[in-house]
Length: 518
Image 1 (cartoon, rainbow, N blue to C red):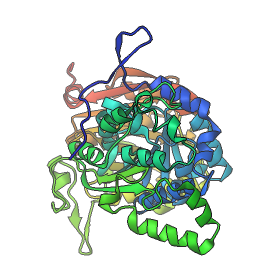
Image 2: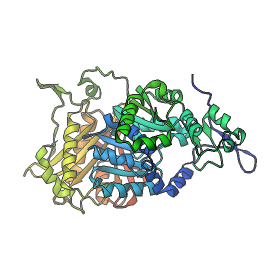
Image 3: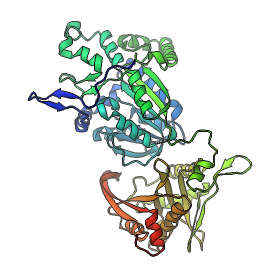
Image 4: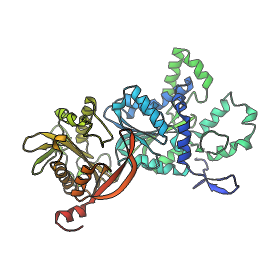
């Protein structure tokens, strides 16, 4: 049975005595963690108990990170978990509401030489992830009790986290547990009984236990809602996640801080308790016991059953059919020819030519990545090759070569987006030797045509820096409209930059092709 939680928005009294809505206040949370600073980094390593909490959380994420995976660490704080994710071989994007926590995370990442594993640093709150494309990440991790601050916005956040996760990807959460927190207060020797449990009206203990809403002026943290296991599971079920698994952190050792210190001093005893925690922390009926409530579920998008024929999902949208080559079903190679260019699939040996321009500061000055190291470029090529093998295919990475000479001059990308993969986003990058010859416009035209004619897309968009005039001309010459200017939406070369979004609809492209006004 789930506990009784008030519907809708929360109400409390202001200083004037008038009722005011008490919702998630992103600015308050941002300021709190900006001021919290290094204490958030120290938190998970300041005691044996906190090291056990870290151990549980890492154990929970381990099956879902590793080489070849794109991972979002949402609510990354100073990067404790991001570091582990990067060390696993994953490409990680760090997102947090606090700019000071992100700065600290970047420092910690760089100190460990892991910057090559980071795709982006993003300052945002999880209720609005518009800066991230649909279905971008294999795994999304939202630890750090982010959802506790959101109150009635928690479903909006889960929907956004789900949106940016790939179909069959995994979403992992950690929140403060209602009963686990109460248990911790009960066994905490530092909480003098007459000052806390002996003052139930002042601390609103019964109200907190009944509703989970922790709203009190003498609590240092911003207002929070504490979850029960049943409540969190229902939230994920209502959001459409499948195969939901719950966990407690810690489980057996919940609240037992002094005992953890004693156990850690004995190597065998500490190893034994970690083993027992590993056995017990995902036992269902213990989920409410831990101070931290863990949850994960598989993301399902659309009505396609897992047993659907490998080529049929792509075929629904008119994409090139996957074929059985005799040793398994594979996507066909894509080759697009124009008057002067050939756009073809990546090859492993392409990395050297790509590295010539991706390591050039002039080439990448408007990009959120680079200049590339050789490792960066090799990883990029490996990623492009692995995306080609995915069925259904969601990303088309192609190199651009001169037809006359065979010289590799750049690369383009068309990524599918949206609930039914009927929208796409294009991107491109070219060597300086290709500049000023119209190659960018020619390749973009071919890629847009491929998207509308072969993939049956409804809409194609692109983003570019507001100072990247050459890129704007490429898009405008291909009939794309400037739809918006996103203020400080891209972190490039140490600063937040504005970007334009361009787009074109299929009917607009068809009208342009026929020489008509759309």
